[in-house]
Length: 281
Image 1: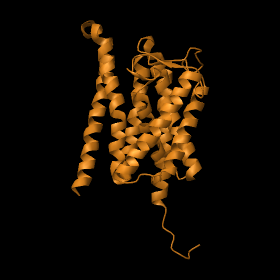
Image 2 (image 1 turned 180 degrees about the vertical axis):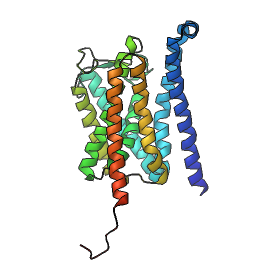
Image 3 (image 1 turned 45 degrees about the vertical axis):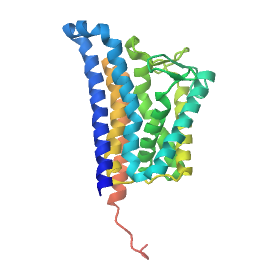
């Protein structure tokens, strides 16, 4: 019992700090619209953006790790983290150097130091964090192994619907990555989502090889996984709305509502279905 309580408390504490970081970033951006406040903080705004952004990226994998630690156990928790991060790093290094599978793109220096000078160290663990959440939510659709991998990729793309416009547009000032050739979706080429899809399917299938995970494996993850996922989508949605990209924000909200609505419907349908006794047709 003490171990269970500790796991819950660790997650609650880390997730609370995670939410405070997001709130601080949003309030800081809102301050730009208040003349006197803007005049005071504008000289320090680069640091004020970097601080919460780096904190958010650092906490992102910690939140997911804490959420599933009790359900997966030590070995699987670490194995999932390493496997997804390595696949994410590999696909990003391939993408930044060849354009495959995401289309030509490159990271700016706003996310700090980079692996081999190309991919920020924060990026691989973000693949782990959201792919494991997506893997859990995709499993709640009850669509089999291949269907779960497909659904995992769809949930990852839903995250990117608002993330990409927010990060590659950034109000024209705070740009985290760029597509030299541009693209029709707020500066992003459509093929980028193909890269997200392929990478996410591969991660989901590797999770299966490592032993997989039951959908909603314990009460903690059953309750909180949709909320953690939603917070990660709502953050870039808010950035889109604040930086003059309302259409990207609305599309992101609609995609989030559709994704979580499907999960809720399928999961509640399964739980509401009456048990069938042996021998009953």
